[in-house]
Image (cartoon, rainbow, N blue to C red):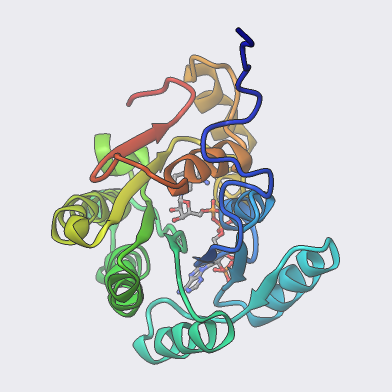
Length: 260
Ligand code: NAP
């Protein structure tokens, strides 16, 4: 009897696990969003680079397209419903479907609770939480018709555990996690999964703004002894975006072991 050996990951057809699937990644001009887009494209997906910064959106899309990836660059401000509708329309007109949505765009406006202004509170709630509500609505309509889809929300360990100086950010990301679990329930019957990835301390412009001293202090506390990379987060997203997933309503913390 001849024995066969499994040489490819399950679901890998040789063309990538996500061959020809259409993926929208918000805030993907740089940082974690860009790494997610590249990793999904690496598995054969057609990617939509979308960002509030039009120039960055175009230059990133051009760069990735020159690498031979299938890319559409569509600027979008995720706090504005009109801008979102235009993006979704452009994607559907160009590629006819949407298989994967990654709600990634986010900002920080840190301050201790007593010093936090209403503007700081509202800006973070609008960009990190209400945005996911606004973007998911038109996208889930398309996915519902297809009877398939993967929604992945980029939350944060702060949304699970809280963090000093980030009451707005913690509330927004905690809300995003609650929204993830509810959408998972409401859309399971349409074969649409919804999960959250909660990054810990990741090396991007967002954390560089904290300065060397704070960065070194946080790294000292991380059991794996380093900051995460955008690609560490991207690999978790690729896993959740894969075909045939029985995982929905989950929060995957990608944090080097730092659970605080
Ligand atoms: P980043 O480097 O600042 O990238 C975020 C991107 O989103 C930027 O290009 C930004 O554009 C864009 N953006 C901001 N507001 C937007 C809007 N209204 N519409 C569309 N795009 C918008 O941040 P990152 O570190 O990659 O973070 C990505 C996600 O991961 C965020 O949701 C963040 O909360 C989450 N996260 C990050 C960490 C971390 O340690 N880095 C940890 C946990 C969670 P502008 O530059 O023009 O604002």
